[in-house]
Image 1 (tube, rainbow, N blue to C red):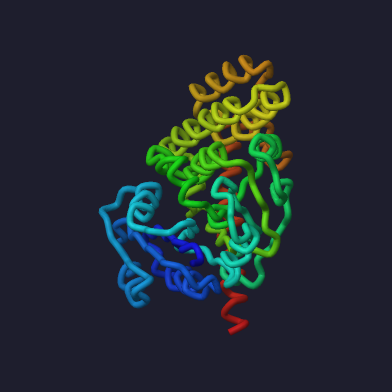
Image 2: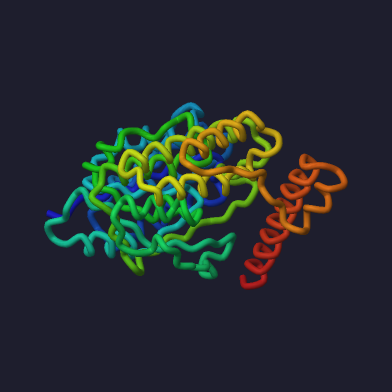
Length: 333
């Protein structure tokens, strides 16, 4: 009998997108599947829209608002699949995504192999998603995968993975303390329990870029900054538990430096901790550098205004891109 694949969809205030996400799950050509939606206390019509699709293999559950990680843990506790496909409520998976990945594993799959695939960003028009290969889009041992991720500031989108139940149970639950980077930390643990990553070309995920409204967007949120720092410390501990070579230490320092822009100068406490950690790794952290567009603001008005201007203009650009793409969607009918 073919393995059962559980497609798990956490949802919160996703009435605009949940129907499309569920349809992409239902349309999977891998026929042995179940779909579990867990609504995390939405205040809109997410639950009503999701329940329109309920069937023997598609169930909707609700819980009080506890966060995305808690909703994912609830979804996993309710599923029966041999393999797990995570899918956020505003993203889509290509109809043959799961089938391609399952076929790549073969008739007698190694349950400790972690499977990944392609992902591309879009806003409203998924057919315009841009699939840009990175150094992670290939078969890799787990240490090499983590090292490249941290050296080059890369990631694999949540829905791109297909995970055996054995690996899922070995990794443990999603960490409810972590907000925007809960998937990054979680899949580090999945990777640690694995025997490496198998990349499946053509297994596509369509990732909706939400900009400043995204859960992963840190901005000036102290709560998200604290959560991100927890995730970063865990990332470094995980990779060093596998290998503590000079290359790995250097990758950890690069990783710290790349992320300091989200903490400096407001969070001097985190910046000092990061400096101490970098020194223990044989490296050195500097204050983040601003691009020429904002450096003159720093010289005249100081770091705080310069970084806030950077955040404001980034959010303004995202809003303009979303409005333009939505307008084009309407024009195209």
